[in-house]
Image (cartoon, rainbow, N blue to C red; front, top):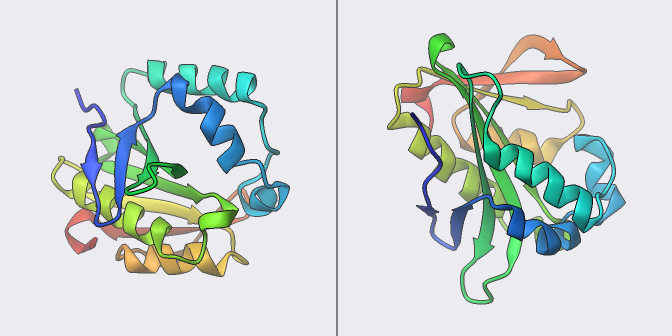
Length: 170
């Protein structure tokens, strides 16, 4: 069974997600503009805590593993975002996603965290890494590229599917 473990990146610690992170993460994710590409709207702390409880409990499908982390910035110790992987061993693949709060964007945190996650996944028996990126989200496309993923002609819910063999990820 795959479980998210703490992962160290150069400036960040990827900490396994816990419902107790909800209050601080509600502030991190509070900017409505952040949701223009990821969809939805900012959740209040109670609703986010309930969501985190579901995520921390794991996928109801035993063939799928949900692995979620918050990003803790070393030094100040504040949370700045999240990364996640939906791992499907039978399909030999993992889907990656990342979100960094608006005040911390443009500093390379998403790239650093996504690379650390991709590196962690390459040590698992995962052959294909996948991400879905909105076609107008240049910053997320840059993160996907930095992780060794390349755009494909496939679309899902209006987003471009990016992929790489785990061996080709950075």
